[in-house]
Image (cartoon, rainbow, N blue to C red):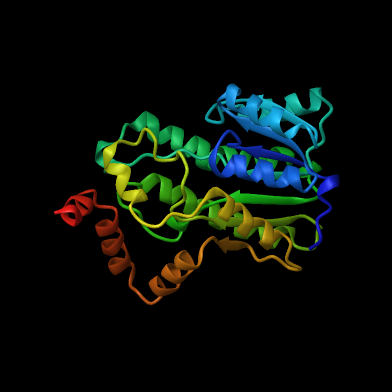
Length: 266
């Protein structure tokens, strides 16, 4: 597929930092206009001021966990006479704790942001899209992730949802796929507590790595429904195909066990 980025206006959620900010900079460098969405207005404003030198950038400070977030954003873009042509569902929240210890209210927020919002945004904006939809899933969507049970289930949903859309929309001119990062150097684990340090104990990819993987996939002649970022992540997923679900779950429990770092230090 050859994307005319100068003809695109990309709605990007979770744009304030990490992978979202990296997407914004990369797309602006290619000439795409941007509609940036995140909770923190200060970060959006700073990023928009940086990118407005070359492209049009609109910002919307919005909490995507709100039940009417998608419809509100659709109305707001229409009020500003913005026609969105592409969508990147990047916003995500997570927690790191045994399911029994997690706060039910926060679990509901995870589902709202990681599952409900992408579905509703896709449904709301689909009639006007003619470029691409990129959904940010994750390696955890392919694997059970003890202590991140709801988050990994949400990413599994995102993969299945995207693969189905990819099939339904083939031949329409709209490209759809999911990008699946593994451990990435972002602020994602901030606020998850000290136990979450186990998530960043290995070699991490960068947000720019993830975006490069996604845009290279987008630029392919016939992009598949999903692409995994990083050779090590792809190798891990290949190896787990030869393992039973029981063995995979047990392996991930050991990897995500906070005591692993203590044992390693000792």
